[in-house]
Image (cartoon, rainbow, N blue to C red; front, side, top):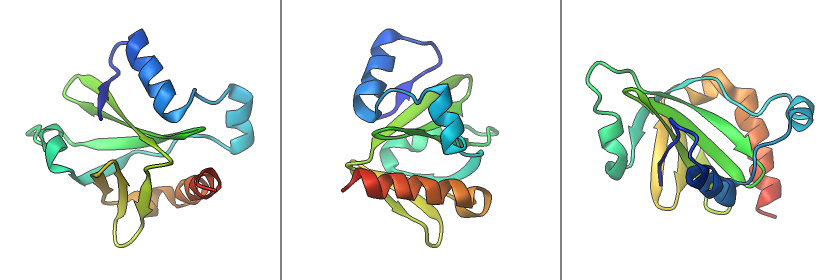
Length: 133
């Protein structure tokens, strides 16, 4: 499910925190070496979410934020911000040939993910492996 995060609505924040956990503290972020990825170009999404890519002249990019119990994929569509929470319990990651995230039967594909964010993806994979144990 994709949630609008343009305005900090309490219900949306609570819903995200329930799905993927509360954000890391500043000290935790520093110890981890950062919790966010660089911007990556989106090449494909599930059919239910294709209207976010049909923005005409808008270039669709996204970045990933690590959370204790999952990840958040942040992107903008026109003038609004959105987040797609993906809990580690449902998350599957494929790195060949493109970087693909699948959760709850829906997917997103990044065309330049591994090239731009290789070390971040490796760190995320280790979080995913420890979370699924």
